[in-house]
Image (cartoon, rainbow, N blue to C red; front, top):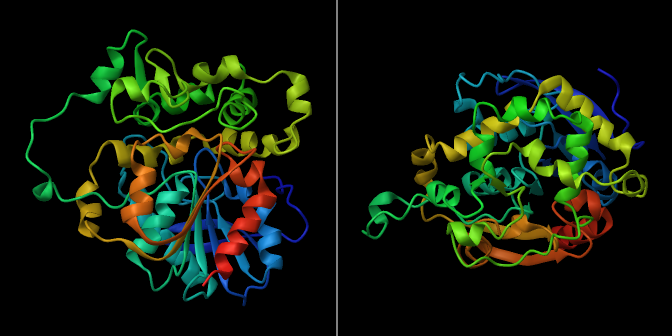
Length: 371
């Protein structure tokens, strides 16, 4: 594998024996300083934190960003669709984080910071082990709290099947997370007609502030009609895969040339890593969520809140803030007892720490020094 094109001061190494993984890690700063653990989402990598690691290290932290289970240069996981999903369940992802910290000699972290699918992992780290994860920053994906016990739910007739309702719309649709859980999702993206770099360019573009159609707002509820107000990359056309869905929004060459937050040289890192690993490792996380087979384990924490200081950051052009109606409000009012800020950053879409790294760093530093 080629060396990653990292800014000077960011180091790369491999940590063996982390919960069955050989974990690839980027780090910056003094290893003896208080630790910040940065957890990426999909379809991303530890590399997604490259723009914020050095400024956070300069603030006095040991900044650690792993390729999480299923991603990048971390090995020891299986991409077999018919294999065991249990290693990808939320409790085991928290175990991965704990194991990495133990291997690095950190008894605790100053904060765990999670973006996209890394956000619920960070939230569960804070919920399960507040003694280790002393603060939590959630980015782009609000955390609405652990699922409740079915015994405590009000008795009512079951609601309509949201997937059948989406498929029955005049423009038939489907939810992207359930599409990502299908057997063919990985192959469809890997075989994108325009090639993997073009697919990733279109996908990153359409979820960024560069795509003018991203003007998100609160949705009325978890109904097919409300969900269908979101763009196609969230509520997809029924007969399309994700590569086909975003292909029409591939930016023209002049827009790519003007892109300062993700030039072609940096996009090539993502394309090269996913060309080697495929997407199935990350897609296994979605299957754990949509298939519900580990829900009972999560219900062990029903009614518990994140009691340590928390903050939420997202781009003002990010539909991810509202994709689960009510989640943003539950996070602020119920799930997080000490939320000190909820910031929607102008000029950023979903990839907030890449699109607006300076503002992201400033808000994180402010959070880390807040009493």
